[in-house]
Length: 200
Length: 200
Length: 200
Figure 1 (cartoon, rainbow over the protein chains, first blue to last red):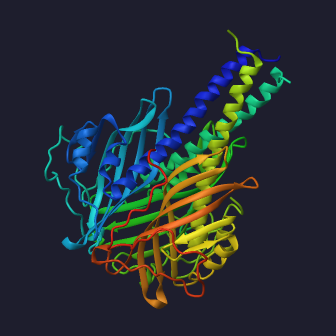
Figure 2: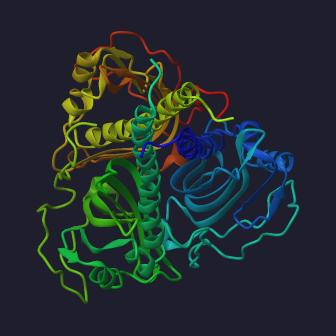
Figure 3: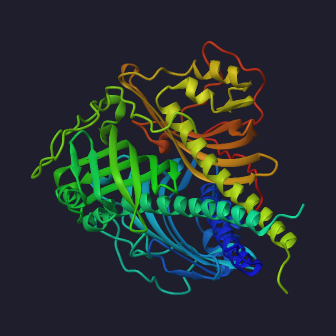
């Protein structure tokens, strides 16, 4: 039996929602990747602008910063990008779950970090898991919460088999708005960042 | 000439298939990424659960394990995650070809590996190519075959320019169900993992 | 009020364009990843075949090669893959913006490089940003321009905190068709590859 226009309309509406979900995936892939490129180069305003108005940031056990402007202040306390500095934060391995209708999403990512400050003779590898959430705000996807859990930092000159660099529990020049939400120590202690999903 | 409902229906059905393909891509991206996060942390049951019932695993020239339960047994012979251990298997650079209608897919990936066991004073970099297949089984995408071909392992303290760590051809405590399907040695021997595609 | 067939058709046509965009994303993801796998293993003909007929290549301040056949000639001047050689170019962290209707796209990527030639006792880490463009040519997406800007190369034995390897400004056996388009030096000088986007 040939479908009625009402039948066809219902199927078109379902497809429109599915098309939006596909678009949301691409935007979220771009969003987190863009964050990494900005952090690499100390482009803190651009990085902060990727957060939702009420977005939060929690990294490395240094507490939670609440709201885009506080995230901006925090980021601006990180090392300045300049000659002799490497601050790479590669954004890798997404597991993304998106509720397009609700305008919310969750993503697990990892970052491989290369940190170096020549004048301080500091050179490190690091690797962290992110469990982030996202929100569609005034039509744009933004980071609702960025939570980075450090798996390890190690000295380049030593390697992870000789030990880890302990987490810095504070950031010079600023204090968080709330205490950290996840208690852990990084390598050489074992740490497993909580998963936002039970099944994929 | 205005299309009939029959015309419109045919176009809607084509779109529905294309929407499914887009969803399958996202699920497969998540699936392989999830595998990596579980392997990192020795969550062997969760990793094994990502395999199809008849799924196979072949890594590093150690033969083929056949069926999800044998994959589980194999994985459980790998190092336990605990204090002092790094076992990162980052899942990167997908080339995915999906036949949504058939419910099958092929994917080339690479893993960058950081392996360390402090008490054994072992620290290594490694990198491998995967040529995997996937299958939709009772509505869920699962790994039909995971085939990891090691390009190199090297000692962190030495680097790949000083040589490679030879492949371990066996796994303590378990023997494979079938011999390896691809003969090779890793760095310093040249190795090119076969490609599942000729054109992209 | 029930929509007319004309209304339904317009919505179907919009969906068809959106489905094409989703497919283009997957093809472009595969394309750039495939490029990396070919470069890793010195498969220069396969790498060159991914370029558009008028495609260009500009890497590391060594000038611009114009046209697929000139790209091929350039690539064939790079180190041969053989025993004792590692030439990994991992393709990571895409920010992709696609105009499916126009058949054009732009992508920011990064490559993490592991380079080693045992007989020359050379072992290096490197990392670069790509700002590439793509074009749909006779129905296939191809690289319209590949522009790789080196953030750093360093000696494996030293690390990036001890300095960087200066850019080689020329390639033995070949000269570019045009001068480089972006003036810079790599680490230890600061460098920020231009962004093709202002907002994500």
